[in-house]
Image 1: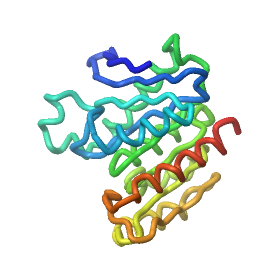
Image 2: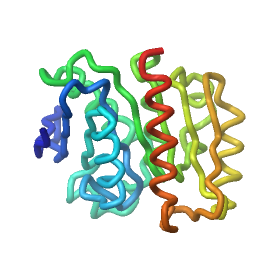
Image 3: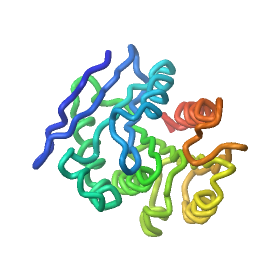
Image 4: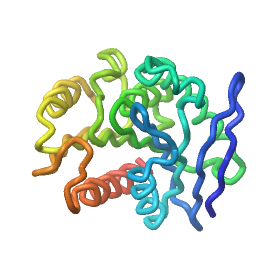
Length: 211
């Protein structure tokens, strides 16, 4: 089942795409990067793979069209984190999702908001995957307090982001892993690399969903 949803929050309504396969084992909430949206072809490809593996998925716009037109908002990690927290609470109360374990999948700057939200929720968030993300932007305090099992995936050719991930990885205290995809750039656009990163993500979610 795939539905276009309107996520009514206190001061704003955000658009999303919610997919719930039969007998879903958990839900993965996407936190996309700057300038992206629920319609991102890359993240939609990933979501389909998650769905075939028994995971529900929610892709949503962290910003309204008006907010997204203000460039600085795309890098306002505090604002994006609060949106993810609010949407997570919305999911927790959704009648078709209620009770399912929750995970985050973050890309680019969205990885920072995913980790900050995971720190906020504590044990409620079972696992986080950052793909080509900027976990360093979450800040030391939140990185230190993340309880969710965290997987950082970086392309081997993405040297600057790889170094930032290594620094953030050292500050994570819970279950963690840094996975480097050889011969992959920041967006994993090389043949087969996005699928490789997604397969690793699936295994991580499966491993840590019920721990």
